[in-house]
Image (tube, rainbow, N blue to C red; front, top):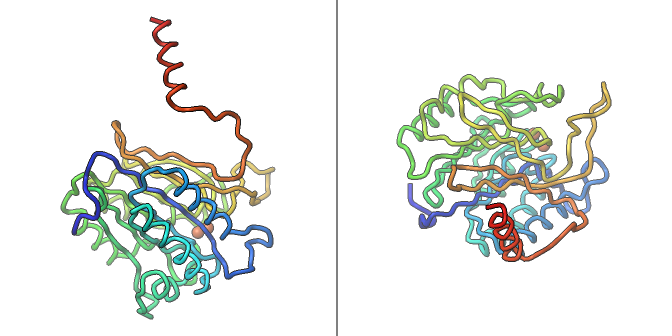
Length: 290
Ligand SMILES: [Fe+2]
Ligand SMILES: [Fe+2]
């Protein structure tokens, strides 16, 4: 595996999940302009000037597998990734269509619906492994035996700065019954495959609510969706979606990998100061506190 960016101490992966894009002029659930959500976040990333090593899309990229949705995604993401100098990786979700996903995003025209789209890249010394947890015609998730074998082979050799594993379906339970019903169906197989390996974190989407847990001691992060929220505390007996979207930044910091949810729903600014002046105030406070 060739190194795609020199190792220089920093690493930031941006996880965008559940973009649920549709063809131009179409909205999701009759009200959400998911393409506008995507472009606002891509603009935010460019405008922030922050370093981004990898842009990782963890499934449900399209809302209904429409090839036009994948073309919109590719055309919006590629120039941004290029300007950021970021590697891009795409995972399949239950709303995606394998043939359209492969053809439009990966320039891979394979038509065998049994094949899975799994990939691995080394970015700034961090190995990013993407697993396809979708099953055509189903909404729950599964990692098949050949994928588990492939994963074990990939993980047999440690990478310089550890591995981040990405798959759409969380291998952990959700307090939202409907979401829980559609989680990964064979988490024990996944746990065995990553046991004793250098996997530092498992990144998922699918739930449309932010959450965290662990599998075999490895942290699992369920990222906030880019399209809309599933309400994790609705009135009893109800299942509902709410407006709102965001993404996750995964940073390799002094203490290891950290997942941080970034709210991207337009919101009023409470304060906006220079970092330098805030740090100076904090230093002054700690001096006075002795
Ligand atoms: Fe989704
Ligand atoms: Fe999903």
